[in-house]
Length: 622
Ligand code: SER
Image 1 (tube, rainbow, N blue to C red):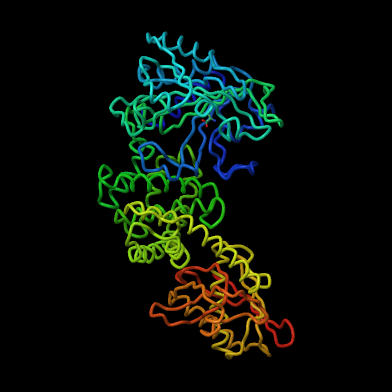
Image 2 (cartoon, helix red, strand yellow):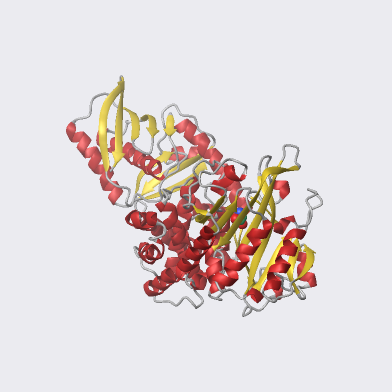
């Protein structure tokens, strides 16, 4: 049974039990400022779990697109992914434990064909701090359900993972654990829940892959919550009947809810009795395409790179389809990070530049019918991946060379990591990954210190430097900021060395520069300025950042804005060609692009007078 059939079977099963099928909410939460991405099926339903009336009734089911940014670092093993689909069903004050556990068990065993002897469950062992009791009801229900399949299921109270690893599972099938494992809320354990947040005890179902041998690195004995990979969680029924109060206690909600969530890729892996979710048809198409593009095999020393690319490209495809574009802030930052990390692993596998975007084809084939938005935005998704790849390949190439140059001992200093970031555009997580692969460490403390110092310095420098300054640090604004430097140097070349900057204001749409000059520019001069800026852009100049004592910057003739105040250590940006021929150098706090490559074409929109002796140019990139 393939995943598409699993998804359909699940929805149909609950539909027959009078559940309304609701569509997947977008990955970008609609009215929920508390989180960047939808990370579970219940998230869009919180108001209804708290008691609001849902238009489609009190029994709901769906398959929800989810993205969990916190799992990025986990991707690489056989079961973690950042994007996944959660099969979910909900009782809004309608049915409770008995119906829920029976339905899920019958679905898994009778409909999806899982061997009940491979299923193990956990329940809540009670919690002294909150005074919420052990979930004996669920234990009794599970015993009955297993017995109906001819299995005598024993139960044991483990409390913690440590104890479970110490004791081993013996003959038991039902395991009670404390709040760390068997309590669910959006913020985790009861202590972490803010007032008003709903939560409750849960009961998780695990599938046992008996071909996976326990590895004692993960503890003396194996148990369902062990991380060795023998057991995989495939579903979680939350009995959501509590709400955190203002005084830190708990009270019952007005209704007893059920919130079930099960990862489609994991259930599909259990159905295939193969613990590798990347081998399910959800991801096997893209994995095969990576094999074709790279000429390498998935089952090889390169498996981790395959998994990272497959997961990340799928994640970013769904993000872009829901309107998230790569950028430096918030959600866009994750889209960017997913693409950049994919580029790095594509580079490892020897996949040629420009090919990464083609990985979208098998994914659209797998998902296009159920999630039409990915089919509809396919071109845009591919374009974004291609553009981002093009920019990052340059950074990666230079950054890798620099990394190899500095990676000599056992340690990358914070300063080295910071220079890689600042001057070469290498994101810290890629430096960390590179270091890890060579058994080296990175002084992250020092990196953070330098990062923060620089940020403060940038603020000081840019508050002195710009009247109005940069509207934001988006990609477009950053490009225009670099163009601003090119423009000033060009004006000095075309109109004379004594042209000085008098003010600037940059948004993602356009730049505005005020400069000293005593007459209107002629048409020829304007064309000449435009041409020279564009000539510099196509020369693919590099932008180098340096910090130095103010005296030194003055000595080297770095441009400073008239009337601006600077500290004793200043930040200077130098735009130069690959032979080190300098075109522009300015006191400036950044940020800038690493290279002028592919920035677009500069156009002057308007040239006008501001006051006596001061002119203003507005320009944009097309
Ligand atoms: N909200 C629960 C989870 O994410 C069940 O849907 O596990």
